[in-house]
Amino acid sequence: MHIQNVEFLVSAVSPAQYPEPLIPEIALAGRSNVGKSSFINAMINRKKLARTSSKPGKTQQLNYYQVEDWFYFVDVPGYGYAKVSKKEKGKWANMLQTYFSERENLELALLIVDFRHKPTKDDIAMKDFFVHYNIPYFVIATKTDKVKKSQWSKHMSEIYRTLNLETVDQILPFSAETKEGREEAWEIITDVLQG
Ligand code: GTP
Ligand code: MG
Image 1: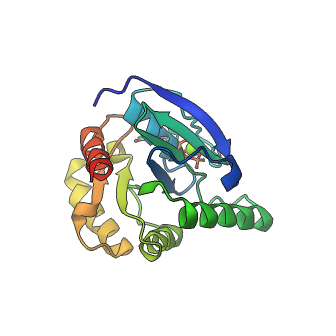
Image 2: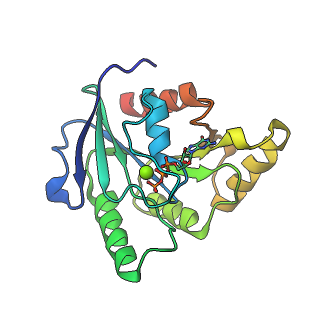
């Protein structure tokens, strides 16, 4: 997939700040520091459009990126960052609850998990949330470059079992470093947006 025009649009906290829902959107969700912003950059072949950091908690608001006149990527702040106060966590939960339960043009949620680790309680809660609100979702298991190929199937089945998925085909191995899975991710997105 060759993408020409991607533009950062807005950082939003509340619905009044979301862009007009004139085109579909795809949201990224996942633990803090798992690689959500890096996923967006890898997909659009830009090194730094979505701000990334080795420190967790970089993305704090819903960051909107418009891809051509086609769809919005929404970079969502990560969860599970220990150094955040209870009050901040509450605000985060409200923001996400509002966003995921109300956004009418949301067509796909990509749950980004770390290929190396067993999904956390928060990952499971996020997946259950998508099921509850009937939001089509797909699991992207990123940082595959950190795992030997001989270990891949073990990691795939652990993610599959822990998230209690219907099939292992709901998980795509991905790496922002090597671009593993990039074309397959574009196929998933294209299928959803055409369907
Ligand atoms: P928050 O905005 O804090 O929620 O984090 P995030 O999920 O957006 O993570 P981000 O994309 O900022 O990446 C976090 C760190 O992981 C950075 O140091 C990235 O370079 C690194 N990283 C992301 N994806 C990959 C990958 O596929 N492979 C490797 N080796 N490192 C990655
Ligand atoms: Mg981020």
